[in-house]
Amino acid sequence: SGVDQLGEFIAEAKVIVPFTGAGISTETGIPDFRSPGGLWTRNRPIPFDEFVASQDARDESWRRRFAMEETFAAAKPGRGHRALASLYRAGKIPAIITQNIDNLHQASGFAAGDVIELHGNTTYARCIGCGTAYDLGWVKTRFEPQQRGPDCSACGEPVKTATISFGQAMPEDEMQRAAELSQHCDLFIAIGSSLVVWPAAGFPVMAKHAGARLVIINNEPTEHDVHADLVIRHDIGQTLGPFVRN
Ligand code: OAD
Ligand code: ZN
Image (tube, rainbow, N blue to C red; front, side):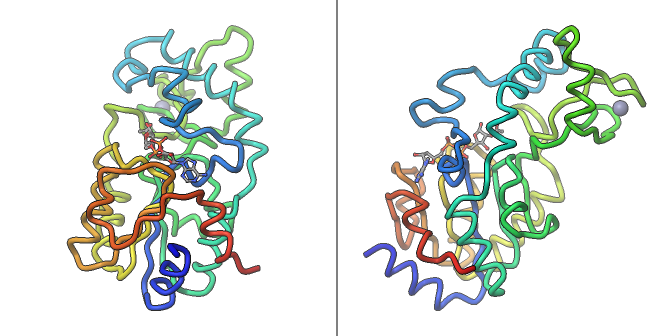
């Protein structure tokens, strides 16, 4: 079966690089973006230029974030996160590339420096001008009275979740490290991503071209399935559960 083949690939690999999307977190209660019920089926994304230009857009963005507050706060690493953390502890995984913003790889035991967050992190905020970091409590105190997104106390520019929105520049160090990891692994496992958002979606192909075996684990077909050595079109928790070691 797919799981047996995956087990063989994992046993044979010296350097495994996982690449995760929102599908690894759905079993923790956090919705993905493009499945039925996903975030982008309910809300239109707010592009970065709109966030910069419009106080209304910033207010709406913070309303959405605080509406998800309990969902994010309650989420605990799922079987997929725990399986990857087990392989990390076993020395098979040097670092993980993720499009996720939910901090669950860190919560499962990855050192923060070994989680390459291509799309940032929603568990804290940053000023879009000077980059000062703020915790969400600081934002909430200022947001709640008038439902207005706050500005930076250092420079006056808007404060935003520390995530990457459409139209916002990708983080350079993370892009560089993700490229190096993709080119220096022998097994690359894409997990729970529709693989439609670029440049992130380029890394599985980059790894394959550099000689790695490519495995794709996702409920739905992806455009990259044709490049994969193994496609497991099945639930992530069930597929990776057997690899959890405590
Ligand atoms: P998507 O919502 O596009 O894709 C998630 C995929 O995971 C879908 O194909 C689901 O079928 C699959 N899936 C969900 N739960 C699963 C489960 N339990 N088992 C197996 N498969 C499952 O999410 P991403 O690919 O992560 O970026 O989205 C990429 C980017 O688009 C996000 O990082 C975000 C979004 O816009 C930005 O906002 C910049
Ligand atoms: Zn600032």
